[in-house]
Length: 128
Length: 425
Image 1 (cartoon, rainbow over the protein chains, first blue to last red):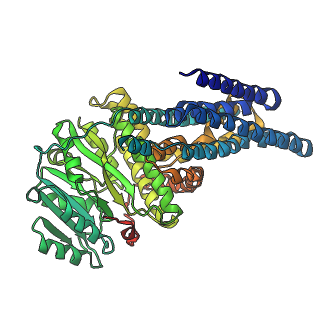
Image 2 (cartoon, rainbow over the protein chains, first blue to last red):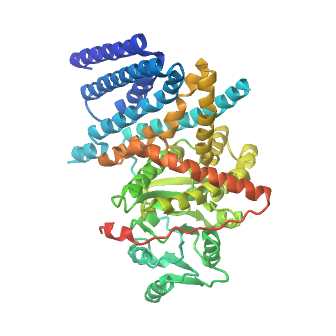
Image 3 (cartoon, each protein chain N blue to C red):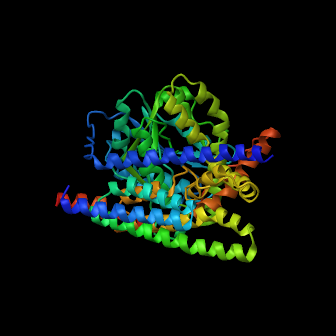
């Protein structure tokens, strides 16, 4: 592994860790769990596909930032809803939060796959 | 009361997590396999058994000609080939088209069934064709399918292994660009064949015979008594009979055949209802036998049971949602909150195989389907659509079991030949 790659990996891991800490500290445990699910799926499956490490890491960081922002928005929405409608809104938030989170996870995941160089194309290039 | 609901919720979500874990393992297996050097598949030229191809056809005038033309183009020696078209009481010109071809080619035969015997479902037509066949290997193709020229060689080479009782090739959607329904069916097929079947075959689990693009060793099919006409999913029934008899089904991923997929939601729901109900019948019929079988290992038994119960999953997800909502509102414990995460992930799954979004995504990636991948978020639509279909199938089956009136009305999927324009020779 090149030194550059190691540096990029370490910095990326730090960025992801920061996102996770921020979600836990400033939002709630549910948002951290959703980010962990995303990171687990992305790291275990997408990292095995073709494409440079820096591209995959960039996607992973971008995903964490999107997830963090998404959860921030819905967290503020939950606070506003709870002030307006009382504690019952909190239950609604718990109910729909994973579903809403899956919406960005699945969409982002499918876009990332489309952005990675295809396994068939790589094989054809290698043969040529 | 709350405790009882919590226990039920725990059971249902555990089942969902078991399926998600299973499919995660499938995805990892296929990815690992794809990274390895491609296995060189030699076509064993010295193994050329006699082959009978059965083509059941009922009112298929718009699609059958392209398949019969393809039968002529097959590279398999024609002196070892017998093609039997079973004209199952068609009211259109299917029989005449088949007669025209059989008149020109000696290896083709047509079996006409009149209205008294015909029209009783695919299993009945297949049994009639099977009685008429002579080949050592029996292959079957639906009339709307379009196989590769060398598909017979690819499918039959696996029968060299005496443990192989049946083979299954890969189904690819021919009319994928037609509309959103065909695109989603194509994604479903990718998840089901490129990942699910491939992984099950690699891991030594229960690879499934899908009713078409596959075949059997004659002696095995004879010993099993042919197709069960009382079951709507006769393919799943045969799959389990084969495994219970000590044989296995081999999946041949490079034997591709192109199908004309359903192109509207109404046809989709009819087809899925039939599959769901048939699969549930198989579940009632085989679950206990799978558990007791001495021919199956522990991992095969677990996979077999999960496979048999797959069409119950939309009902399980619906139930867990119904139970989960009051639990969250009235007793929001940490356990319920933690398990609640499995429900939305399950919603992004296909129903026929419970392939979650990550499995379908990886399958599409391995197939090089860049544009199709972008449709993966729409999996949630098909799942919601399938919940009432599977629930109705289950309730209908339950009522028919209670009333002891298990009437199976075979609702045939009609094909209008939209796939013809996508064939490029």
